[in-house]
Amino acid sequence: MTEQRQLQCTAVLPPGLEEAGAAELRELGASAVKPLRRAVAFRTDLAGFYRLQLQARLPFRLLRQLAAFPCRSREELYAGVQRATDWEQWLPPELSFRVDASGSLPGLNHSHYSALQVKNALVDWQRQHFGQRSSVDLDDPDLHLHVHLGGGQAQLSVDGSGESLHRRGYRPRMGLAPLKENLAAGLIRLTGWDGHVPLADPLCGSGTLLIEAACMALGRAAGLEHRFALERWPDFNGPLWNQALEQAASGERTVLSDGTPLAPVLGLEHDAGVADQARSNAEAAGVGGAVTIRCADFRSFEPPPGPGVLVCNPPYGERIGEADELEQLYADLGRMVKERCSGWDFWLLSGNPELTGALRMKASRRIPVSNGGIDCRWLHYSIR
Ligand SMILES: C[S@@+](CC[C@H](N)C(=O)[O-])C[C@H]1O[C@@H](n2cnc3c(N)ncnc32)[C@H](O)[C@@H]1O
Image (tube, rainbow, N blue to C red; front, top):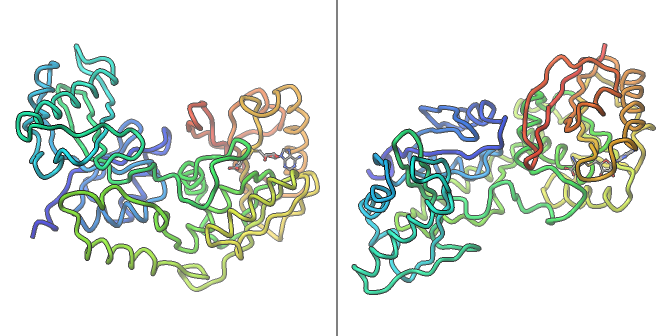
């Protein structure tokens, strides 16, 4: 019975992907889905929560609310946390924990301080009840708590993901300014590409956009390689979790959901080492056979018969290369696309409007997104 109880949950999303993230959660069966700032609130039962952890591609984290209570001061936060749930079950002293905080309330403006207040409330409660306290573990805690303050309320949640969900496990933690996997998945979702027409990234780097796209089109669940913190929760339901795992794994196909073959998915990268990395990432993600990476300059790109979708995340000077050296690259990219990609949709992640001007093209859509804290636009051009 308890498994069907509705849980109030929050998905933490990259800024700009709230609506796309909400749509994905709805598709995966969440209800009462409400986009917020950098987050989406939703409801689901435990089976749904497990399914979303394994299959949602856009969130960084999925949090499950333990309690929400009125909170207007430090004292109310302290007392509210101690009363919030059955801590004997959730946090016996042999388990480690960490607390993160977001939002603010009058007198609680610093998230570090708010997190400390929650931690103190918990270890004081433990000392009173058990005569001993848990240790804090920032790297691999048994229980990862989040407190969100705002609107005269505190929401206390547990993070089921453990490590951030964007770490799919197919990519080593290195490379030249790679996109986070969940941002790449969100960008692809915004293009509306569904696998029926070719997809190409002429400056593909480690291949993240293409790999996420191929995984989405072929139903490869995002979280199958992930280690989840929720397995250490007191109400962890092993059989239900195994069912969710089986269901997630069974979604994988070699063709599209309507039985038609996946259209070509193609990347160009001029750095041979990075191109190799992209190939091994695609292999590790299980889509090595679906994604072709060529070591070549984008200027030599010959699109497969279209129409199709062209995506790219060219360097924009914030991290690699300097802006003035890149102007020529953007001018050449604009020329190549206009000359050879007629009938295609072109999407470019821009972190530098001056460079984008060198394309000499007019965007029909400009979607604000944040890439690792850099304010960017996901620009759409229809090439006619
Ligand atoms: C910002 S990175 C792309 C990162 C990629 N989206 C990822 O997630 O890994 C830009 C890539 O463009 C490549 N590049 C730069 N100039 C190029 C050119 N002329 N032809 C092909 N690739 C190029 C760089 O080597 C770099 O890997």
